Image 1 (cartoon, rainbow, N blue to C red):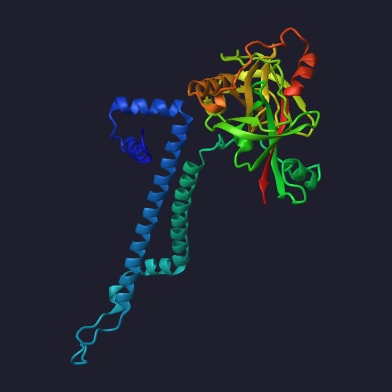
Image 2: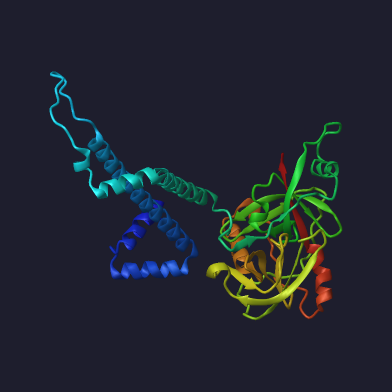
Length: 392
């Protein structure tokens, strides 16, 4: 596996034309096909350009300092011998200072502050770039590239009182002890993955959560916990932990493991508001933002809060998980392909983890051949608000 230093060495050789023709062609093909590698190369280019600019500023500053020191030396009075006190030689400043030097002196006097500011800006740019690269490496948390908006809905005011929320979150607490105050920060959508109480949502919705609460259309609330996260594909698996939860029953939809067709009619349910919202459109591309093949692009208007919602085809099969939208195109939304979700569940089962044991994905759906209103009536019981809470 290549390290950061390996990538930088490769990019530097490419930038200086030191790569052989086959290696250069291979790298260019990878840059075109891999958005993450292209972003890494753009970061390298920005960093090296900034460092070169800083070096040029420093060189110019040193040259100006040298010229200024030479002019000051030319203006100095005749040197006096330290032992005799007599003049050893004299300098005529009129003869020694040329017209060019006079102009340089005038330039330095008038632009000294400007040159200093330019050098300071260059230094700040270098450190800002290095800090940005470090933060980018550390984060690696969601597809938050320029022009892409993750649909996490901020919650400025919880409609229920703070006391009611904290009581719900701490109903296992001891009587007479005041519950710890928590505050809702944001929310999204999730939907049932299995009948045993596992759900799916987008990773960026539950990132950094201290507590999770899922709420259905009948306002039933359940504690949930994160079981597994696939950061690269913006997927998270949750599990309801409340003992009072009795299961979802048989899920009405199946999970499609293959590709959906271009132009296919699709629809979604989500919670950009407190009430569930329906949206429909078409599958407009079989790749997502900047050509990411793990995502679909769909022509469905979505808003913050839709993240984690199900994307279904006409027959009611689950084909994706809504993730984000493009900032400059309101109708361009993106969804993680269901094939990646199925692959994730299969990999957990193959690893024989304890969390994977109860995963039983439905093989057959019950929505094909029914009208859209009938489909929605059945689906609403399996789509939830995912509320995220953080301690103050």
